[in-house]
Length: 208
Image (cartoon, rainbow, N blue to C red):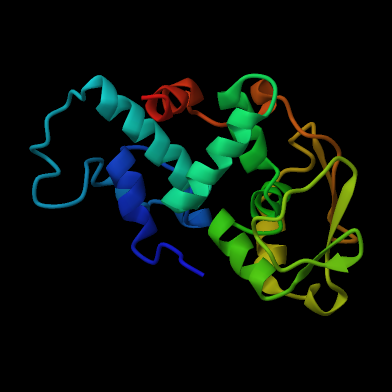
């Protein structure tokens, strides 16, 4: 399976904002963006500050794609699916991305980042509705119950992540830290999703 294997911190520097790709490191003084808030590479500091209309749209697409940890073809497929659905295409896109199992596990606090969540899923540490699921892109439906497998309940990465997570901060999710289970109550509305992005720019980009 194809996957970006480069430096996650360089992606944040390229977008000049924290994308929270490295878990606890993003909240510490070790975050490279705190010291080098400019694009990576020898021309990072000299790069012009203004973008064309296309450049602004492209940066917004790249930012959202990187936040959710997707490659180009994967992202395009989600956009096409969102475009076929009824309603606002941009909002549909974000709601689809939020339904991904790796994203929900991250939101529940079972993993410090979406990247870590993908690794845990691929290593078969989670079930959905009592069935083993090892596909990070699995789309959850309202009422689905996510649980840490019995043999995985002592994993330090899960407990360390939960200790840094506040209880039930998302209206569409509930989590039981004692039993290591969570419920995807409903598909969230766009205004409920804490994502600093202008998805309409992405729609405009793909509409060219």
